[in-house]
Picture 1 (cartoon, rainbow, N blue to C red):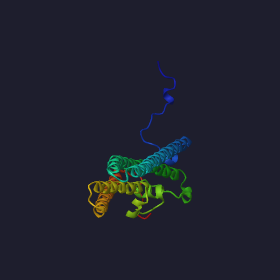
Picture 2: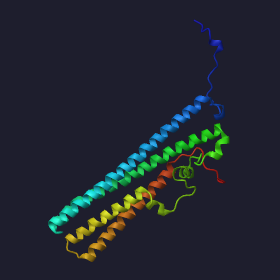
Picture 3: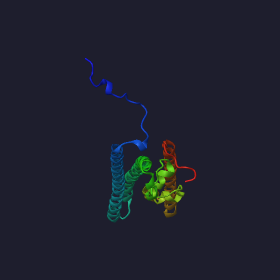
Length: 234
């Protein structure tokens, strides 16, 4: 049978409408996606704080346990054995925490990139609102940096030790140094040698964390696909 409304139908077009011509439903969709990304960022921050708190709590408990064992054994062989069993576990927990925090930072960068793209759409719909936005509308690394930590230029290398992964890496490296120092004490190498071995392992661990962190940041910047890059004159 013939469709009585066939002549009234308009063929669908594969060409998307310009953003400024989209209807009110487009703004609702953008706002829904924006709130979804905000919720994802909130979960990311919650996990980062939880993982860091677990590491700090484990480290605190380990220090208390070592103090009690030291009093009971007068820093004898029992203390050395207990410390060499416990502290490597704490170091592994710190290592896993730093690795997960690196993943969390990458996830957060992706969510910020998505919100920058949505903000770009907002300003396409209402360009007159641009003076009221303090975050970026661009989705490259500079735009993400401006929206996440309010910086327009790439921060100095010292910023790594201000961020949570850097703080955890330093504390975990201290744990590594303590393991080496206690092992040296167990081998009766003397105080000077114990301090030297602890310092060397601390430096090696911290250098490993720094190298891994730089590679992760460089990899993340390469993998970011920018649709709205920051203009050169911005």
